Amino acid sequence: MMLSTKLPVSMAKVAAPGQSARPVACPTPRVAGAGSARRLPVARATSTEGDEIALLEKALSIAKERAAKAKTAAAAPAAAAGGYSGPAFAIKTFNAISPVGLERFPAGKYVVSGDDAKLPASPMAIMLRSHQLKQEEVPPTVRCIVRCGAGVNNIPVPKMTELGIPVFNTPGANANAVKELVICGLLLASRGILEGNKYTEEVIYKEENMDYDKVAKRIEKDKAKFVGCEIEGKTLGVVGLGAIGGRVVNAALALGMKVVGYDPVLSLDAAWKLPGDRMGRAESLEELLKVSDYVTVHVPYIKNATHHMINGANLKLCKPNVSFLNFSRGEIIDGEALLDMYKSGRMTGKYVSDFADPFLSGHPKHLVIPHLGASTEEAEDNSAAMAADTVKDFLETGTIRNSVNFPQTVLPPKPGHVGGRLCIVNKNEAGVLGQITTFLGTQKVNIEQQINTSRGDIAYTVLDLSKIDDPAGLQDGLAKACPGVISSRFIGNMFDDEMGKPGTFFYVKWASS
Ligand SMILES: O=C(O)[C@H](O)COP(=O)(O)O
Image 1: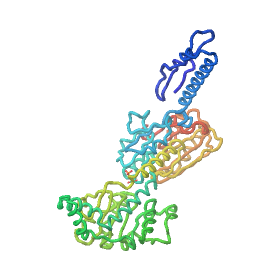
Image 2: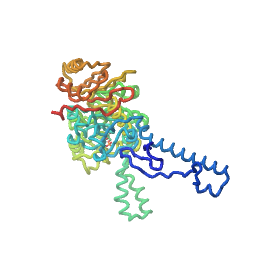
Image 3: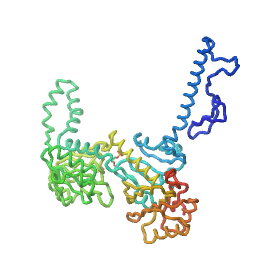
Image 4: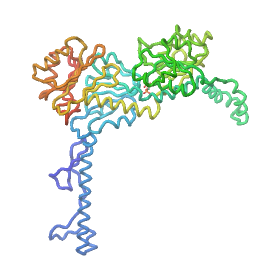
């Protein structure tokens, strides 16, 4: 809110953020002027000089208080945005994203909405959960996509890589929620919990006509139909030992299970969290399947890698009463092959999942629930908060962390440096970096510091440059001179006080040609 100094206080201009100022009437205390007969209404009733001074002082203090409040309100949007005064970053959401994450975007600096009409401009980032993102939903202004969660199989990642768009996820943010459901899944597989509940509601209640005494007797008598087994002492095979798998290992050990793990691409970070001396390590998936009473999968779904990872060939190696838990993605287990095993009587264990299967729907061994793995308040909050921080970091500083298709890239600002930061996505080909630096040299632009990283066919270059007068012109020239540049984004011109603006100009090759 802005108070105009040119107008009388009673007609101050008030402008809400994003609205033009318009005059409004403000109640103003009427005070006595020198030699004036005007009095505050209450002053007439208490007419001593002392009373009048006291009242005038009170009126003055009220007026001062009101002015101070107005000043604080006027400063509020800027304070929330950390003093930022540039155009707002527009972020498009799909799915309901936890407010805990959305609140991390300072008001005034960001506008985040699922409704295009509410965004000030075409979005620069997309934030989503399980929405199946189509390429046509990604306009050229979008410079990054963040998945509030782990799985990114709802995003066309290879296409986004080709277009030079980093895709981020939030590894570990919902891991505890999934782990707890896996423990529940172990018990659902070992005891007749869901079957017994279904039987009570659909058979006993009906047959006994809700007569309490009869229902109570039947519940005792029919318990023999649902005898289970205990998980203590049994072997759990954990396929994938990342954030979720690692937690499952520790929880299962605490419940007295034996654990064997398999992960051909185990990271060093994940390995540190495993109780190496208390769990077995399988050298192959086959080895794990042979010894396990329960198998739980915690790997991402990748079409040519983990599709039908559990299939007809390796199911034959399993113990006949093995139970499978799948809280990762339905396609990791070949439901048709499992159905064949059930039909032939070679397998008797259960298949517990929060994903449907086209071949096993309705099969009594397939205990299926809605996709609830990450559906806890805590997980939704954690994932949204981590996603928001990741996007902010990328948009404001060019930093790449937790991307599934771009290399990790962090270039801390150089203390005291004044200049511009240019983030370039380029082809990972010989000579491209040379073209970029040569071009900048011809423009008399000095590179103060830089980082160049690559992953597969894509490379990412962050350059801290001397002060740039015409960023759009520089980007245009760069694009013409360097065919290997896919897109470039200019972040700010003065690191100390302006870094973090959306950028004056985006060059996006695939949208420009
Ligand atoms: O990939 C994930 O993180 C989980 O499957 C959760 O997905 P959701 O955010 O759609 O619940």
